[in-house]
Image 1 (tube, rainbow over the protein chains, first blue to last red):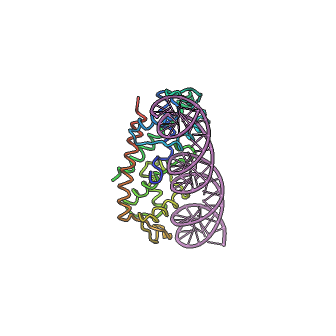
Image 2 (cartoon, rainbow over the protein chains, first blue to last red; image 1 turned 90 degrees about the horizontal axis):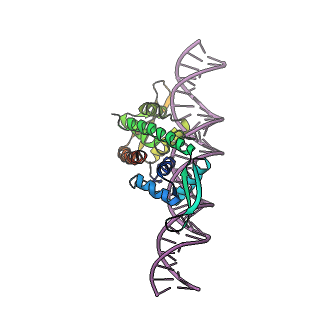
Image 3 (spheres, rainbow over the protein chains, first blue to last red; image 1 turned 135 degrees about the horizontal axis):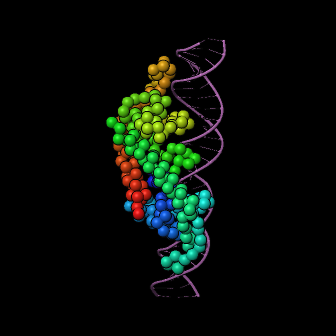
Length: 109
Length: 109
DNA sequence: GCTCCTCATATCGACATTCGATATGAAGAG
DNA sequence: CTCTTCATATCGAATGTCGATATGAGGAGC
């Protein structure tokens, strides 16, 4: 598990989708929101965040447009597309499946 | 999530440790046991299994010795070391932490 | 106007893990 | 003696995260 890599690989995408399902945000805003949603368990570094955002956008799950942050900075705002919403549902179900399997395995006598 | 890679990256090690905590097994036996423990959710391919076993052994969490399988085949039997047992406890706790964070995040309004 | 800090986005190389394919060899069945 | 199964093993490709580093603009203080 997170030994060298604090983040469990593959879980970041669904967290980003979830963060953006609640409200559109710019990049660093997503990072903060994920951190908050996971009660600080996930700290998303820029080196992970931006590749992930680009990846999700390229897959058509996010739509981006440039705007201004609360501090008058140039910021790229992301929001969930319809396909992204569907993907979120799919990945959430998949996560539950995996978590259930892990739970069953780790709690075996 | 498991899109291109069916296994959630980083979860295999703890499952192997768990499988061997219940009883010593040879390589393919571990694979079968993990599959059974996760109710079929995890199917561990040889290309993932053997590197993982070697990795865990190298870290001192498993001890291996050659023996004979039930079918009279030459097989390498693995068992958990004391350090492995400690590692299992550690990774189990870590999993619970991550799973709890994911659960909180995905169930947020 | 100048300097410094913070916000915001971005990219790069390194690293670990899993996958798919392929290989070897021995036991047992027919 | 051939074919299938069991058992271990390795290799190259793909993926995702990290650490470091870079750029540039806004705002504060002097």
